[in-house]
Structures are given as structure tokens and as C-alpha cells.
Image (cartoon, rainbow, N blue to C red; front, side, top):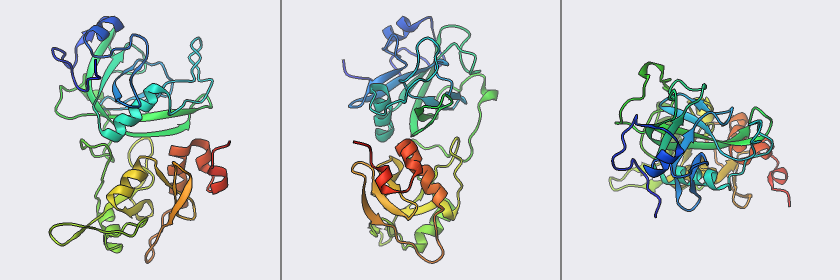
Length: 304
């Protein structure tokens, strides 16, 4: 049976399930043990958040979710780094790139006011809007996913405990194009020419198009600033590549393709516009882990 993305027929948001077997039979979450359902090729169709990882954060309408792998089954402590190639993690990365909806199921645990008192509850559809790597509380590299609840669904209960994140505007796309006043200023400064390829995208009404790309992402937990020192003018292709981790910057503002770890361009800058190196370093670390802290291309190369 092919993987299904969306809410199964006959299932309602807020519906309770006694156990994983009921979730399986209702096609809400098919694995009876794994917390992530999905593969790299197809994407992930559902997850369960039940307090299994200490780094998880449940804010209701948005979740900071920890990928799987590297955990001691007895102590539940992280004892090894997680891998982006592990099936469930790779599936969520694919869901991010392709804007596939993910069913979120909450299981009983003390870490969330939205968790049920027993069993499991179906909380509706979310989108993976960001993913990155960071050092977890137990000292190992973990993969983190930000999931945001799609609008126009039955509200979560208790509604009063939903934590808003005003810095992160919600749209149903696989990435965010935040067109603030500062982003518009940067685009005009560069005449809508991409700082990587120096190409401006022409449109039918004789104007050009570009996108303002934030280097350090906005919103929790990254808390990047909507500031000129954190914005680039990029074409849609390079913006997508940058947001999806296919492109990072050295402190010298050289664009590096992460697939081959080779330089592709030295960014052009105009007038007094500069990007803070701390923002470039933060972005590198999201995609390259501990290696990303360095700006030396030789050190960024993976070890043989």
C-alpha cells in the first residue's frame, strides 16, 4: 500500500486511541513501535510525540521534535550521534523539501499539556518548516525538526496554553519567504540580482523578482533578527538551496555547496551592506553540525 498523506477517512482531530494497535488499524500511525513513519524516498506521513526524547518541545501549534537514533533503550539517554540518513529522519527531511503534511499523534507524557491523560490523541496535520542539527542535552549531535500546525483545523485543547511565535508567520509552503521592509530594502539595493549568481529573475510585467533570505532563521529556537546584517538577496533557486542546507557561507562570505563541499561563488556586496559572520557560522552549524563552527574549508570537509 502506498503511503498516505493527510487525515484518514473516518478519523477526526482530537480523536482518542487506546494503543498503538488502534493507531495502526486506523491508518493514523502505522508503525507499532517507531515514532516516525516514513522513508527518504516517500517522505514521512506521521509522527508520535510521547516524551521519548528530552530535547522535544511541545508548544501546541508548533513543535520542536527530535529525530530518532542514538538513544539508550534502558536509560533513554542519548549515547550516540543521530544520522540524517536514518529512515525516519530522512523521511521528515523529504517532507520538509516537498511540503508534505505530517499527521501528529500525542501520547501520554508529563512534558506536554496537550498530551492525553492516557493512550493517544490525534492532533491533526502539521508541516515540517525547518530542520537542523545541534548538540543535544546529553552531549551528542541530534536532528531537530520544527513542525507547524496547518490552519483551518479543529483547535487544540487547552487553547489557552498554545504558545504563539509572532516572529514566524505561517504559510502553507515548504519554506518561508518573509518579505519584511528590510528584505525589500536589500532587494532594491541589489537591483533584485542574486548575490550568489548575480541573476535577476524577469517577470511578465517588466519588473524583476528576488527573495530576501534570512541567514540565521527567524523564530524559536533560532531567534535570528530581522536585520540587514542577517539578510541576503537571493534568486528563488539559491534561496531554496540555502534554506534546505545545500548551500552555506564561510566567514569570508564564500558560498559552499554542501553536497560536494566546493566553493561556487564569492558573494557580492554593495554599499555598506554586510552579513555578520556569527549568523553565517550559525547557519553552517545547522547543516554541518560541529564541523560547521569552523569557517576553514579544509576543516569542513568530511573525514575520509
